[in-house]
Image 1 (cartoon, rainbow, N blue to C red):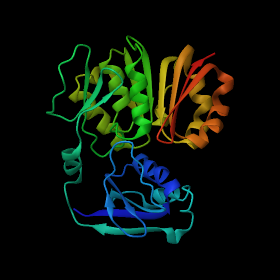
Image 2: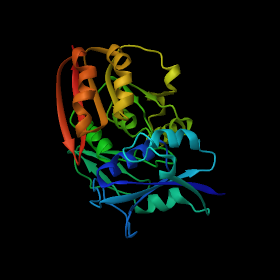
Image 3: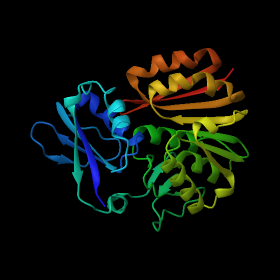
Length: 293
C-alpha cells in the first residue's frame, strides 16, 4: 500500500499551527525539520522548534482529499501560495504501530493517565487509566491543546453528566469523561475514521454503552452539562451559537485548539453567553473554560 506526504515550509512562529492543522486533518505521521539545514527533529510533548524556517511534513492515506488538505493548509501564514505546498508518494510502512512504539504513558493533572495498550501505570489510589490506540485519528494527549483539556477533565467531577466531545478525533476526551463516570457522552466529528477510532477506543476501555458517535449534521441538539471542543479558532467561532445553545444553565464549556493571539477573538464570540470564564495557556496555546449564563 502506498501513502502520500504533503510538505510545506513556514516560519517558526507558524509551525505549531501547521502541525495542529495536519493533526486535525487526520495525518498519520508528522515530521518537523529545519527548513534550511534539514536535520530531522522528533520533538517531545509540548516542545516547539525554534528554527527560523521549518519544513512540516504530514503523511496521509492515498485516498485522502488533497484539495481539502491544501485548502486548510493555505490558511497557515506563509503557506498561501500553491507552490508552497508539495506532494510525494511514500513507500509502505506500518506507520501507526511505529508511532505507538514511541508512545509512552502520560499523566494529566493528579490522577488521569493515557496509556497505550499493554502498558502499566503506578498503582496509586485514585488513578484513572484510559487505554488508547489513536489509529488514523488525531488526539493522543501529546499536543498542548489536548493536554490542556485532559488536565481540566482530571480536576472536575463528571459523574452522571451528559458530555459532548465536539471534534472528537480519537475520542480521547469523551472516553476520559466516560471512564470518569459520565452518564452519557456524545462524540462528534466530520471524519468517519475519527468516529471509527473513537468506537474502537471506547470498546478498549469498556465504555461503548456510554458513547454515541455522529457526524456534525446528525447531531440532535439537546441540553448537555459539559461541552469539550478541541478544534481550531475559526470553526470554534462559527460553532458559537450551536455550542452555547446546547448547554444547560450553568453548564461548562471548554474550548481549545486556540493560539494565544487568537484567544480574544474566540472569547468575543462566546462571552455574551457565558456568566464567567477562565483562561489557561501552555506552549503558546490556550484553553478557555466558561460557565453558561
